[in-house]
Image 1 (cartoon, rainbow, N blue to C red):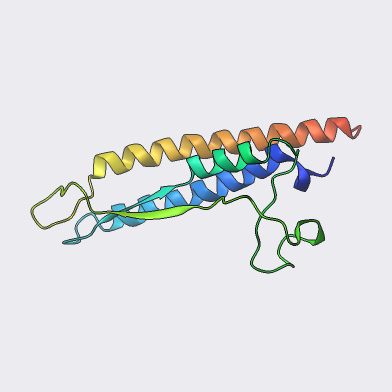
Image 2 (cartoon, helix red, strand yellow; image 1 turned 120 degrees about the vertical axis):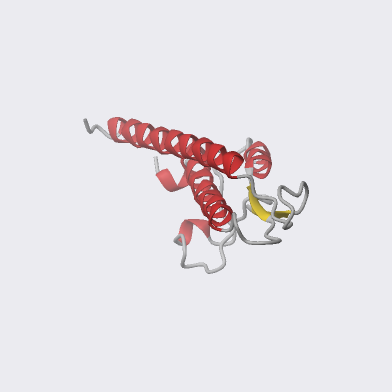
Length: 140
């Protein structure tokens, strides 16, 4: 089985990539905790990933939309993810301080811990999937 055509593998890859972007947004929020009028950024992708997976249930493949046909090789040319995208949202609700900044460091640290657990979980799932493929191919 080609891991690049494996729906579980592709979902893990997309999820890990989106979680990495969330790490970046949380880091940026924490770096700007003392910046007046800074509005926190959030990364949203779970609903889009779920929809992409549900839309592709009839096939075993979750394909990617690419910006260049050389990025992922010839097996992916011209195929799309049925709308999967990672959304970056600037949250201007709930002013946290008088200077207009809405970053709560405690919430951001909790979000960082949650993201780390999800990222580690995806990486463990992908490692187990790779072990399953290796076993199926006759490896140990």
